Image (cartoon, rainbow, N blue to C red; front, top):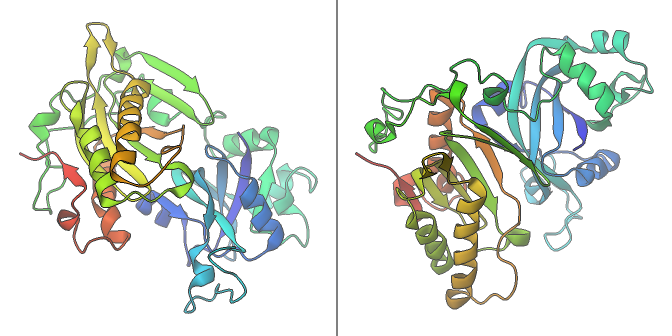
Amino acid sequence: MNYWLMKSEPDVYSIADLKRDRTSIWDGVRNYQARNFLREMSPGDLAFFYHSNTQPPGIVGLMRVVETGIADPTQFDQNSKYYDAKSSKDDPRWQTVVVEFVDEFPNLISLEALKQKFSEDELLVVRKGNRLSVMPISEEVAKKVLILGGQDAHPTKDRAVVEQASSLLILGGQDAHPTGKNQLAVEQASSLPLKLRKSKLKISQRKLPHWELEEAVYFITFNTWEKLELTPEARQVVFNSCKFFDKQRYQLFCLVVMPDHVHILIQPLRKFDDEFWSLSNILHSIKSYSSKEIPKVMKHIGTIWQDERYDRIVRDEREFKEFWEYIRQNPVKAGLSNTPEEYHFLWQISQ
């Protein structure tokens, strides 16, 4: 895992905006060295969010890289100030990443404070004349910055896990989507609240770190291989695969199958008295079955899914609502439907 610092002007896009959106594409980078740094990023890398061109400038939070190798869409938009007439969709000049909100620091770490703590050789952002908007940070410096920001020096541990002694995950008892026509059936999530204090924690690592906590609810994303676009028939196969073991191996709360990725809000159920179904087993079943069936309905030979998945333990009721609505709005934001309910491959638990 690598560490980075990424700048954004707060009146254009702030840490509060990312916290609201949960994930965002980091568009608008038009410096070749900064672009090359974006190309070097890997899923799971952590980046410090830096507010620039404001007073005082400084580090305000932390985010995680969740997708890489994305063509910056603004380079093709003639109405954007970042439009590049020399770039083509077949050979895009500007690549970027998708980032996910991790945390907002309780106190800004100002540029002046960083200058007092680090030398120009240790931290590029304090170097006189440096104007890069994206830059690497060593692990040693990153840990010191995390401490300055009041964070655990191992931020890949979700705070819900790090602070499992506190009963942080409390969910249920209220309508989690009161303004929508399809309200959450909270009584169907009656296995919550989650008792983290007594839960067993399992840690694994591939390219991304994975934390599994018994009885936890997860927001999970998995992507097709090299952005393979699934036909409607193929999406139906994936949709059916996700639904197949609902209420047997896991409780599904919300699901959307997009052309090149899937989002699910899910809670694994007990396999035996002392064991829950693992996320690895659940995702393997979905990916394995759909990989065999998709070639029957879509012309494709080869790999269907990326090996890795992105998973996040849902910390509390607020996050549960936010992830639910994020999943619902995915097809709308992508222009695939006017409302969530119009999209054929969206499912949510109902009363």
